[in-house]
Length: 586
Image (cartoon, rainbow, N blue to C red):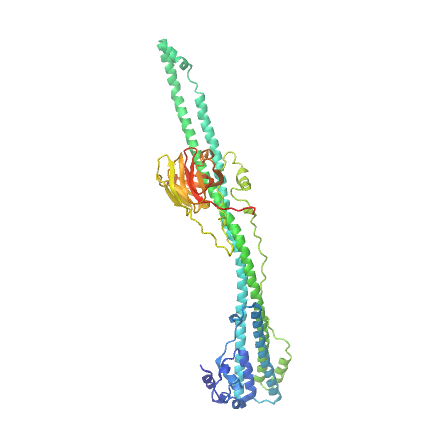
């Protein structure tokens, strides 16, 4: 609706207040407080105002009344697009709130003057002016409603800032599940090792019984002289001896067969348990590494989250306090305006008493506009000491394994080290010097000697598993975290003592994974040193799958021909990776 038609809708009795179209200048006015000031000026000017507006391009009283019909919305602090300077924004917000309150105070002062004139009988209001009074009250109601809406929005913002800060705690609590999993895996491993210890005792007892039975056969004494009896043709004696042997051998054979079977069964159960416990150990170590990553990462994320959201909360509180102060000032002025409107609208008998009440009011309540601010709770202490030592550190091995009651009879296998975040080598260059291009590792002329002379393949490691041999189907190597991006040379299941050779275009580190079930140190190639890490080997044959750990040995080689030999036939994996340049004591 245009301002012109809005004015027309007021009725013929008010046309004197709208003699000319509203000027573009008036259309740019903002704020109901400004409208209220204009209305009061119009109210006091009365019908005379029409004569001053015609053809005027400035904000005269008639134009101001047309401003009422546009229902210009109050500008909200949250909608400002001001200078990027935070101080400028706060200053602008404070200035706008102050200007609004000043306009409303001006309106209150004008209405007080008018109310005094009405009470003293020096002012007589026309019907049109009383209509304007209604419009002023409507403006005040709308200002109050808008103020309440802004107050609620600001309170919601303050509450959300508190909730966002509390949400940072989830960064720490996220490690609790990982800690629980690690604890469960540790308990499962300890239980397995205890059972392994018990199975060892059972195996030793049954096999000792078998060995003891074999060592004390209590055979008939005649057996020692049986050969000589045959030479002397003492046939009756021979027959009697054979009869004794027959009587003795049948139960003895049955007993030995039983004891041998018991020994074999207990030995197999014990060996299966060793493999099971090896898997449980690997699961525990990986679970602890995951727990360490979750806790240290969670603590880091928590610190960053708290820092940023505390800053956001402080900034929001500063802005809301400025808005809150302005709303309260405006609210006091609006209540005073309504008080003087009540004087003018009251009966002649009530007007003096009401006027005195308005004059005697020192302060109107603004408690309903109070914002409840929330102080940031103290930051939680994020304790990373439970993971200060971790798999393969000597202190961790001692606490988790070597001090346990089962360790002497059920020792652990090689440890699987954690893959630490950020452990990959990085390079830097100065701003004025372009970094040298990185050469990709190229392997050629590969020879891999094995028992079956199986085909040889080269594959880049890009996951946690890799197929082990070209002449085996389901066999896989797993837990390859520290070997990511290396080249794996896949060949014979059984490596022989012949040459393992190939050519490389850059310096490399060759890592061999040795079968952990035997004396791997004695069979590792000459010059290769144990790294303290292990990967897993899985036969992958469903329910009867067998699993064991393969300790890692490594040696550096220059670019060119690489050649080495295993010092015994063995199941082994060969990995090749670019050598990492490490600078120290610079």
